[in-house]
Length: 218
Image (cartoon, rainbow, N blue to C red; front, side):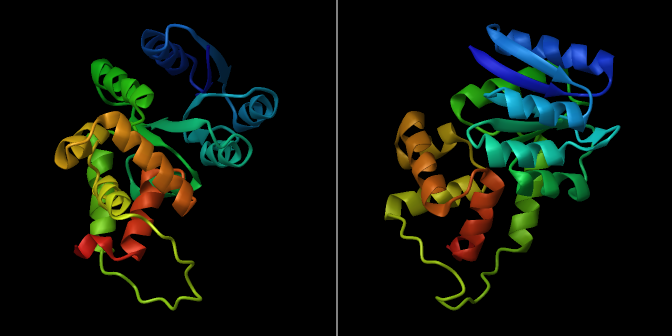
C-alpha cells in the first residue's frame, strides 16, 4: 500500500494529478489537501510514502510542507509539482528536501514517465529543471578552501566517489551503472550509502557536497 499526499489548491488540477498518480500507483491511498495548514495536519497524522506538493497555496508555500516532511518523515519522497521554473522557487524547494521537481505544463505522458522513475529510486526532474540545476552547480564548480575544522571529514571509497560525481552531474542510475559496468540496483545501494555518509537526502544536496569536495574539477 502506498500512502500519497497530494497538495494542490485547484480542484480540477488536483483531480488531474490524482488520475496520473492512480495510473502509476494503482494501489495508492491518496490524502488530498488544498492548503498548507491542512497538509501539515495530515503530515502529523499519517505516514506518507510520497508527497506531491504545489508551491503557491492560499495560505503559504508548499516549501513549508516539504520541510516538515523532511523533519518528521524523512523517508517520505517529496516531489514538487508546479508551474514555477525559476531559481527563486526551485532552489528553496530543493534545499528544503524536495526529491524531485516536475512542471505541470508538460505533457501527461511525460509526467507519468517522471513519476514512474520514483519506484526506480531516481529523482523525477523536468528536463529544463535538470539543466537549471546542473548550470547552477557548474557555475559554482570551483572548490572553496576550507580548514579541516570548518568542514567535517567524510571518508568515501573510490567507488563511492565515482558514483557521487556522476550523481552530482545529473546522470540517472542506469546511466551511471552503464558507465561503471554495474547494475542499477548496485548503483542505488551506493547512492543510499553515500547519502547516509554525507547526511543528505537529495541529489541537489549531494551535488553541493561534491562541489565542496572539489570533485567537479576531476
